[in-house]
Amino acid sequence: QTCALPIRAARGDQMFVFSYEEPIDNDYQHPVLVCAAQISRKRMAECRSFSDFNEAEKRQLEQARQTIKENLFFFDFSGCGEIMAGNKGAAELDAKISEMIALGCRPSGIVIDWFWHMVLRAANHAKIDIHNIRNFAQGMLAEFKQIAGRHNVWFWINQQTASAEASRKKVGDYNTAAEYKGFANTLNFCFNLGAMDLNQVTEIKSSKSRGARVQKMALQLDGDFATFRSCEDTFVLDERTRKFVPRQAQHAMPTADTQPPKSSTAQDYAVGELPI
Image (cartoon, rainbow, N blue to C red):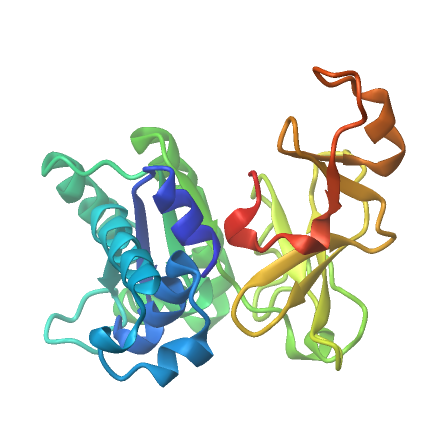
């Protein structure tokens, strides 16, 4: 999510992020700025003021801040601020989206961080019996679909994996969500992240791909940026088309001078640089 938001914003897509667990503060937004500016956290920590950055870094920061200001909108629905927002579930979310659209700001995507905390707060406000809370959650997911269709937006909904599954090396399926196993049953798509090993490598498993066979991939984190790579190193970047292609197919693709395209392995490219 931290990397996806700046990528979408750099394209000019306006994104709304609703935080139901943590207040929107510098700790929440800082990772987004790091990824948008492509300046490491270590370097950020070394510079106590803006003047400590070199000229190239200053330009990167200014551009990143402008991109975030224009296209990323953070809404504190944690209830930690002066206004107790975030207690009324999907209806409150829909009202805020409609309000922003009326002001001329139309989002392309909505991020919910995170779902179960949103459910608990809305259920408590509506005095839902604890035994009916999962049915209440299912109804909220149905409302998300209605909101998505009404405003022509897509939703990115964060939900935790069950602690028992998170502790295993195996990556869980879409039905291993914490508190509510049926979380992704009605969603179009979901993916699951496994626990990182000592090399900071974790598997990302795509579930509910509507019957499409998904190749096994891995997600590697270096502490600041994420890099994707094929587990078998079978994909390369075709510099001509800027797309990842199977290694065995690279020589079959003609170029202007009939030479095989220059290629690099997928792990050489940070998320912010991927030709998505």
